[in-house]
Image 1 (cartoon, helix red, strand yellow):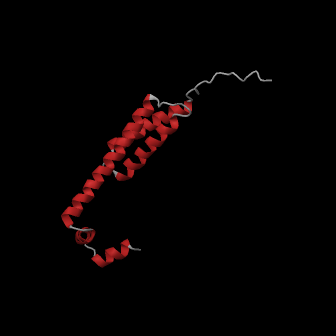
Image 2: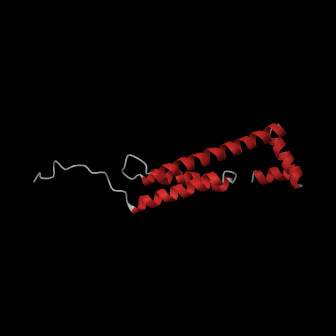
Length: 123
């Protein structure tokens, strides 16, 4: 009745799915780092690289080597993108003085009236 009381605990084997998640994490991490200047590509790829690296662990305590690299590259890609766009916004803010100054300069460059631009933004 109690034959299986003293069973040994085994670490779960790494499945084919977790190996695929590691490879996907690595690939997305590389894309995130190489596309830091493209906000719409770098942020989703970096976030997915971090998520897939975390999910690839399964029940194990440590990351696989590909998952570690994917996690690191994804985090670096996210950090670089945030820093680059933060500095760009800070430079525009410094150049034009305020958000209103940025919008006025944009309306002049686009040939659009400032009030029309505000109406489109607040729709």
